[in-house]
Length: 162
Picture 1 (tube, one colour):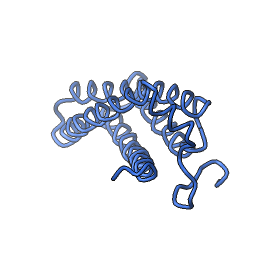
Picture 2 (tube, one colour):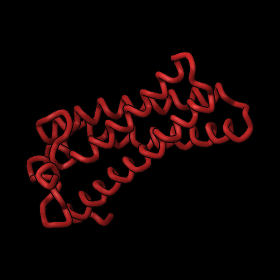
Picture 3 (cartoon, rainbow, N blue to C red):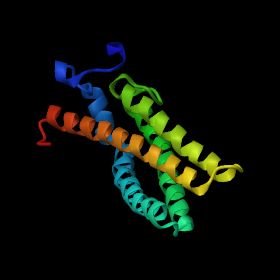
Picture 4 (cartoon, rainbow, N blue to C red):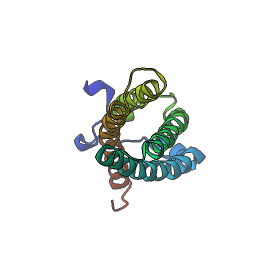
């Protein structure tokens, strides 16, 4: 397990100097920096709409659209994030520095994709669909926390206050 991830807490740097230079020079770093808060905003709106639907039984369409928008941001950030990893680390996904973040991202994508399946397939009640969305959102929050932690570690390692 330790072979797949550098542990910044044990003295290993998250980025080599060359990787840091590629990260800082890449437009994909900016793209990720824009998409991540937009996805989080879509998540916040969607959580409110989903919970409102579950509480009141109204607003199914708005909740559904919000989940699809959030899922669209997720797919977009995963694609652009894979490109970012290729530019910075030389491989599209599962670079050692972000191995576990990527693994959890796969679970987040699987859950969001299963929601879309449940939306389109017969036999899934609206409340079940919303439950799937909330399960996806719980794992998304955990994944976002992983990435925020890595951002903090990177800032600390570069001497920028976190």
